Image: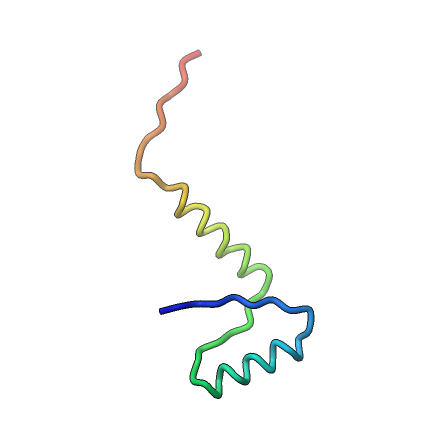
Amino acid sequence: MQKALLESESLSDLKLLLDLAKKLGIKSKIISVDEIEEIGMANAIKIGRTNEFLNKISQ
């Protein structure tokens, strides 16, 4: 499965692309800024997860 993320200042242009996607049988959805931030945070957590414990720094 492949994905694409598109951004435009023009809502009418995005609607045109969504209509085209629908006609081509491609799933599409407009997502909010909050959803984009949540996706970015989840990705950062996933990348940062190493399943290793950090050593305590002795002072």
